[in-house]
Image (cartoon, rainbow, N blue to C red):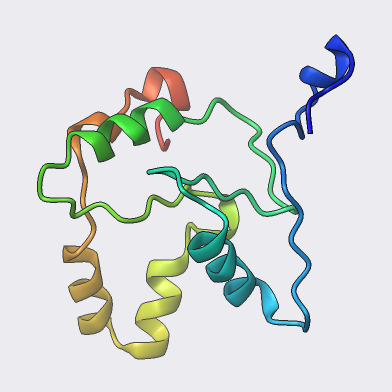
Length: 124
């Protein structure tokens, strides 16, 4: 529906659609439904309702890395948060250090995402 006034065209929800599923699916399956049935763009940025970007976030660099990925190996980019900085150790404790080391070899480090510590601090 077309917006009636200029203020409505500036709404952060101007391209938003709310989809109510018939039954509870949980976050993962609800997101899967949205990705398969509601999105037709090449990239999707999913920000959970309880997460906040407190510093500049390299979204442009992420898209550039994905566009430059000729082999299309990059399927997902996660942003580090304090709550997930220990995942490697937690995973290793649960499954074994060998498994954690193997997972670590699968992580890509595209040059576009090797961002200077001047922008994000020494530890990103």
